Length: 171
Image (cartoon, rainbow, N blue to C red; front, side):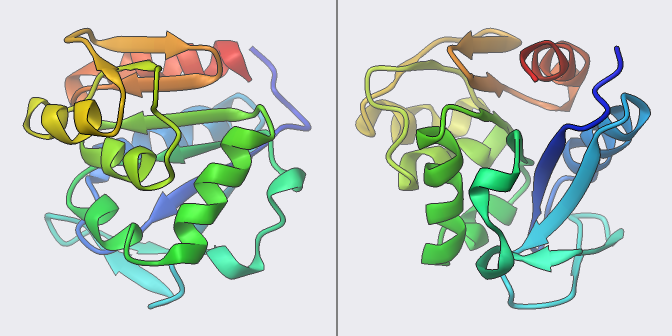
């Protein structure tokens, strides 16, 4: 599928899951998407759970959400750091409120809860944050991918093929 002309943000922070950042990055690049890696602003480069570096293109405070067609939030422990930055949380909420694709995998549901975008929505995630999402008002289900409007969620790296198929289809 050719998605030339589309622009998507992938968020990054310390301890990101390398599969959940790089698989979407290259899958979108392959489809012709302009991918922009965005950090919290705390560093110009972040290290994954296993030490793989990721340089960011911009920080969240430099982004104009209307210029993008979607956002992908990788898991790992990075979402716990991301949600400590109000500008990062606002970015997710703005993309969601603009009716664009918001895709979260694994622990990225923490960012969805902090952005207050899961109330009355059906989502999935890594099972350890199920309660966090339910307490934020979501209906949680155990499926490899859940598409609720433009909100796309998955559980683990094993779900990445289904996750990215849903992302590409919804872009």
